[in-house]
Length: 507
Image (tube, rainbow, N blue to C red; front, top):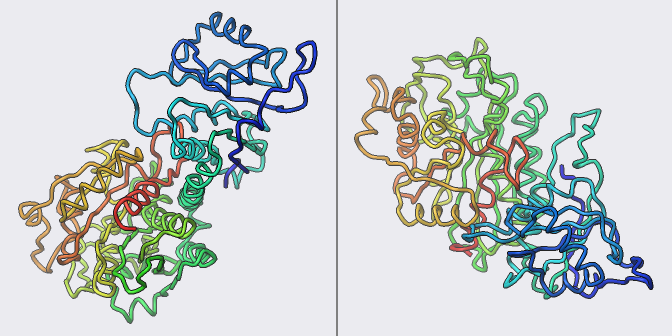
């Protein structure tokens, strides 16, 4: 759900000033106009031309407000006489050091200042800006505009998101900006799809409904297969099924395929997502405080679904397979118990020490299934797996664990470029010993110390030699701090990261 309705790139001459005699604005550009200012309120050529009749007034207003064009500052004015607009926003650009994702952040910042203004014209005559940066600005606008208010019968009177917003972005090269913007449109749709899945309440988005929503990707050309519990039992995904055996809602697995490579037989890349639609902790029940947040324990699966939407919507030239395990972890009389031993799809037996360490059981069967059936180039799994990763990295980075240096380096670079940052933590034999079981091949938790690492060690036992990375997104996938491009509880984290990874290295 988004309050942002439309955007388009237009040439500069569509926003030329049309002042009438006497300095009154003409009928050309109305609503809000956004221009950008550098150090000491330096304006670009198109902005200078548009404001020609009122340059002195704008400079005077800037001096009174002590506005000097510094980044993340704005001069908000009723449009001066002679300017064909109702409202003028002069947004500062000057920064002492270039910041990564500066134009994405700029778009979010501007959207936050617009609130319910409509229509909006942005004169994007930023010095040395490329079409890609103009498209990033547009993406920032759209990401900031997302608003999940489906269940509010009375809208807040906060001035944001109440009215549709239509934005024209005036640029020098319309064709180039439109080409770059097409990929950003696909990205914003994928991120919003993931955000909405995470934000939905658990009585609405249970496993069967999640799987149904994923089937909507078929409209974009994604092949979707949904496996019910009977099929999962037949395949042998007993670890996954065991997680949901205490729940009223049955478990599901959704397998998504996108074949966009020129070679239809080329090996796919693979993404796997944890989709615990609600996690009570099972018999090892969680404390009541904050348990409502466990509706977001499917953020990994949401990211994978959003990524598939983005890749298909932009017609990515790559073959992809994605698998999400959709379960509920509930504590009825049929729920699994601490002390139970289950046999995974791989044949390895797992001793259940704590039923609240359930996500790794879901991923164990999915990872084995994907690496065994599809022989992918690599596998990346995403999961809100451990609270320990928040202790280690807070909400700034996702934890990265991997058996492959090249894949790790590529993920780190993509994180730096997109702002969805990852930080690599170790795995190794010493940690692996902590999950050895007295009664089975492995136990599902290694205790308090190094909890995120031992969870990753558990998963690594189910990937063989396939290049693999595990992203623990407990701190980033839900409830992460708001910023200029995300004001939502469900952040859609990971869609842009993985789209960049694919675009840079696998298309």
